[in-house]
Structure formats: C-alpha cells, structure tokens
Amino acid sequence: MRRPHRSTSGILLAAGTLVALGTPATASGAAPAGAERAPETAHTSAAQRDATAFWTPERMRSATPLDLPDAAPDGPAASAVRPAAESRGAVSTVAPTAPAVPSTRVASIPQAGGPWTGGGAVTHTIGRVFFTFQNRTASCSGDAVTSKNGSVVLTAGHCVKYQGSWHTNWVFVPGYHDGQSPYGTWAAAKTLSTPQWTASEDMNNDIGAAVVGPVDGKRLTDVVGGQGLEFNDGYNKDMYAFGFPAASPYDGSKLIYCSGTSTKDFLLTQDHGLGCNMTGGSSGGPWFTSFDESTGAGLQASVNSFGYTFLPNTMFGPYFGDEAKNLYDTAQNT
Image 1 (cartoon, rainbow, N blue to C red):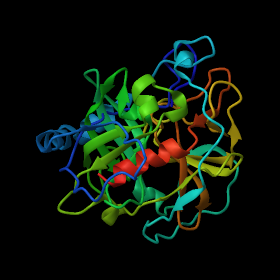
Image 2: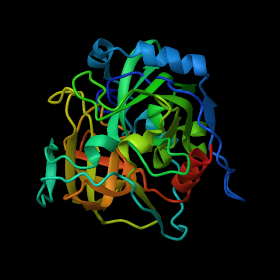
Image 3: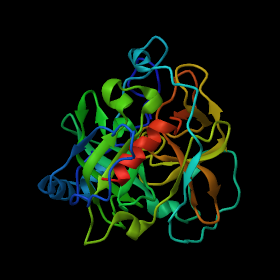
Image 4: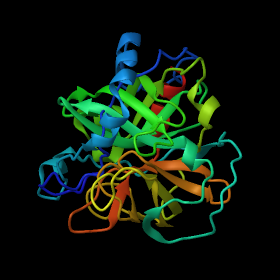
C-alpha cells in the first residue's frame, strides 16, 4: 500500500517479485458483450517455469516491500487521480467456493492490526505475490477468488504493472509462511489490470489480477478454494482487510488483519478507508464484506492500495464497481 506523500516509504507493497509461473489457463469464454476488455500481458510457459524455479525460499525471505511514490495533494501521484463517477451499476455478488475449514475466531471488530490466528479459508486463499520490478525482488499480497476458470488471483494494480512496465517473474504463494509454499507456487500465465490504472495509474482503479497456470495438473481454487466477490454495494460497511505486511514492525512471515466500519476517502479518491496499521507488503491483500469469522470466508470488495502520511494507521482500497467487475470478468473468461 502506498502512503500518499512525496516520500516513497509509505506504500503498502509487499516485499517480493512478480513472477509469471505455471502454464497458460484454458480459455473458457469471451468477455461480456459491451464490456471493455482489461489490458493484460501474457507470460510464456518457459517464463512460468523459470519464475517458479527463481523463487526459492531464500529469495522469498529476502524480498523487500516495493514502495511507490506517495500521493499527497501536492505530490506527483495526485495528478494521476481522476474523479470517479458516482453512478454505479447494479449490485452483484459471487459466492465463495472456499473449503469449509473451521475457524476458532470470535467476533473482533474493530481491530487495528494483528496476526490472524483462527484458521479458516483465509489461511488457504490469501498469499504473498512475488515478482521482479526493475531488477529487484519485491512482493505484494493477493487472494484466490471463485472464477469460471478456477485460476484467478486478485491484487492491486501496482502489483502487476508500475511505471509503464508489467512485472516479471510473477508468482502467487497461497498460505505463505517463512519462505514455505504449503499449497504450491503458482505462476502467472497472464497478468491484468484496469484500463484506468494501465493508462495513467489512476488510484481509483488500482486493481490487478492474474490468471495462474495449473500445478501438478490442478487448478488453483481446486486446491485452496476461492473467496466470493461483491461489486457496487456502496460504502460504510463492516470490512475485514488482510495482507502480508513486510515493513517494520512486520516481517512478511504472518497473515495480518484489520477490521472495522469503512469510510469514504474525503480527499483524493473515491476509495474505501479503514483504520489499519499494516505496512509495505500488504498491497493487494483482500478486503471482505459479509465476512464470517467462523469459516474465514467472505465477499471480496476491495484491495489494500495506499495511505496518507498525515493519516497514520489508516489505509485505503479502491471501490469495486463496474471497472473491477470488468477486470474480474476478463480474467475469469481467459
């Protein structure tokens, strides 16, 4: 996540390198009629194999948060913010397909930030994203979601493309722990983002996706399950945000969460806001509505994106409206 201001130290990007892994997913249909296809880049089978081999446990542990320029009102990122239209499409949801994994959590709203210790579906579907950016290893966070092709990961736009270049060596490691990949390392066959982020890095649409190839002949959500999604359902919701922050006081080794009632950004964007102390490396981690602590499953409605330097312990995530739904539809029909 980025902390809007002139310094580059506040973005919530996770430490790691975006790596393209796996084999290309099988096409399962075309984008919906009338929808603009989200920009994407393909990763060859050879690149996917190379990415998988590249990400050794040692490289995962040593990857550092990828910080982006902050977006203060007088900072360089402010010019990349475009006013978001207030009119929205109809509310739509996608049900979770996460395995019924019991959790031991009890209700805990609000939570400003702490380790998730209750188990449940989030421990399988959420993971770290690793990739290469300007010849350095970096990382973010991501989440496996229900999809037609069983292979879609949602993350932040800056976790797939930044400063005009698509990240390489992109991999997703669900359930990451201390360099370990308990559910496999999944390389991207394609990475995608919204047209608005791809063209101008508009923070209102800082949303990215990856279609990952199979591992040992199995699709991603057949192994870890998939969280649900919700689009166009408004603001001021009870939200749970998750990620793998890797900047102090965190080290990227544990799944961290925050919870509370969201607000609406009053300054630069139309994003959701949430009290949360997650740091660099958590970018791209999911925000859930209708989250059930007893199962660890919910409806994803945003991702960790940025924060303002003058608002410590608050982070922001893009509104999942028509643009997010178009990106999701493009990815699941790839």
